[in-house]
Amino acid sequence: MDYFDQIGREWYERAGELARWVMAHLVNRTDVWGRYTRRKSDAASRAVTVPFRDERGKVFLDVDSLTKHFRTRQPSGQLGVHSAGSDLTSRWLAIDIDLHEDDDSLSVSKEGNLAAACGWRQSLVERGLDPLLLDSNGIGGFHLLVVFSEPMSTDSVHQFGAQLVADYEKRGLERKPEVFPDKPTWDRYGDWLRLPGRHHTRPHYTRVWNDEPFAESPWLEGHEAIDRILATRPAATQLLEQLGLSKLSRTVCLDFDGVLHSYRSGWRGAQTIPDPPIHGTREAVARLRQTYRVVVYSARCRTVEGRRAVENWLRTHDIQVDEVCDYKPPSLVYVDDRAIRFRGDWEQTITDIQQFRK
Picture 1: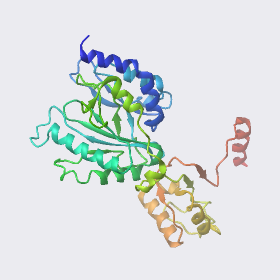
Picture 2: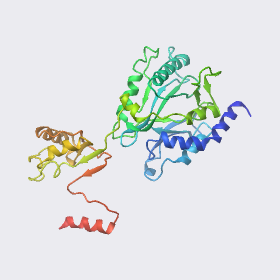
Picture 3: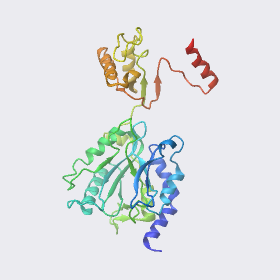
Picture 4: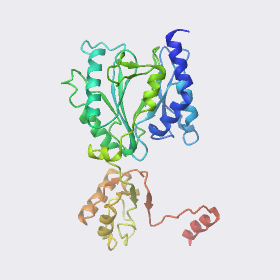
């Protein structure tokens, strides 16, 4: 058995431990994830988001799937996890300092990438964090990973990462490394990062920077690399907040007509909003915003003109919300004047619906 096969066997033996660690610390959502696939006719793997559309909501990422990733010893089937959840929170930050075999830029080098990665790693250590520096492909591509003790606002995580690597030119790099998570939006799944383990194209297993002083080798491999990953100390929330990251307020989604707008005149078109607010609306929304992120979603907002009309009406009546949405965002609760609460009894629910015909 050669050395590469021995390292592969060690990752195989520890697959269950690694899978449970990833599920506990890195998985932001289980409804979608990344995967590298390769058909027999393809020369290289391609990255896709799975499960495919007709299976979404039926198949979910689990420990068994993650275990298969770490047991994979072929250049196909490797997995990645998304950097943000559907509620726009993230459980980790990663910096991808990339270098590919086909990169023809003369100014990019393995040594230059490593120097920059080590510099950013040291900056994170000095801030009290426990970063993992991973040799992702063996030819000069590196991942810098920080794990959190609980999910933080995706926007604040991205901003922290962007500020960290803003000095990339001073560190000798010609392009800014990719920050995971990227800029968050509600209407897409976002980016995903390949998990450690067997590389999807090259004969390489992830190595981990040896942060022990006076170490004989700068890189840990096999069991030693796995031990270091599993020993990673998640960053405490209090420390993260001191560094400028924040927890995301839970979202309360308010309907517009009959909840904010008194709607006495009925429907006059998406852009026509003739009536005043329901009594106490401005004060109530202000109270909610002390604890929650308050958004407004309405059928009016499906067009740009309708959404602007709602925004103008809110400004006119000095009602401040966090966002007027043209989509229905994930929320803690939805407040709607025509909503029916489902209590686990379908017969009662059907009776409640039928009352609207009276």
